[in-house]
Image 1 (spheres, rainbow, N blue to C red):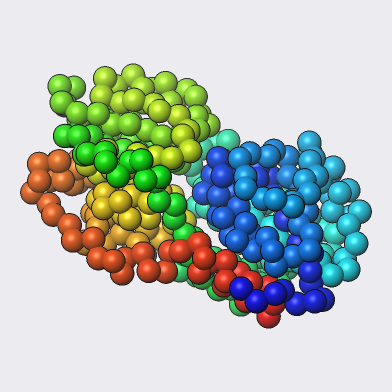
Image 2: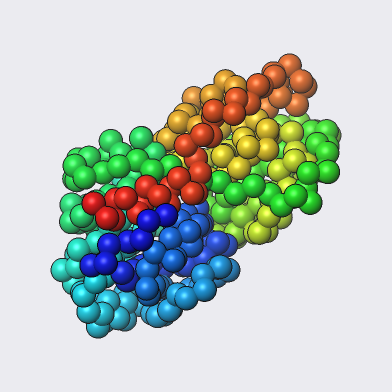
Length: 338
């Protein structure tokens, strides 16, 4: 990659959780800027939690509340700096009058009505995101679906798809066990509320397993899911053994564009998901089945058709041509140099 402009040799990343073991958004920030690390003389990461990462020269400045983050941000000189954010606390750039770039990974305003808790959060989150989108120099959308929303606030928006991570070579010798379904994503109401309804429709004598990978955000919901005899809560693991399964099930009712779907498809694992958000930008008849939102009956039939072998998939190599971390990193650099 070409060197960044001499007038912008330092990078400040403002986020909450930084690393590969939190969420799709935090993974994307890590994967993209790890590839751009040598483009900058210095990288400062302002966050409240540090996870697994592969950065060599990043300087971390931790905060415990938003006001501490604001003070840290204000203490940094504007000289030769590119500011970048990926979460709601990028509103601090607006308050501190910093020029910044932003990637919108989140799911507001759709999240507003998922629970009373999210409704309360929306009172702050929605105005904060609107201010962020209006003020950013450029906004990056990770789906065409979300680009349409962002354009209401900022015309300088570009779609850059996230990449995907391929499981380590050790799982190449794994074989697909019969009637094994995988679900990937942190366990919260948005992703798994409908899963309970689906599981209730499955025969209790189902001779198979549904393994769920992800952090237990909502432990009460995780316990309810785990009460089904065929469900196994696996928690977070750094490398997911996709090749051991027959299909990936995704029951989220609100989405942007999940990285896990790309990871499943590259391992030739068919996807069954609700047709929401930007999911149709990656899932098509060659690699999965899209189900009308909330239609649990059709979702169950779709799963049955895959497990029984009635549904076959071709998995075109072109499905994920634009979902590549190296391509994404190059596009980010172009945007920040423009």
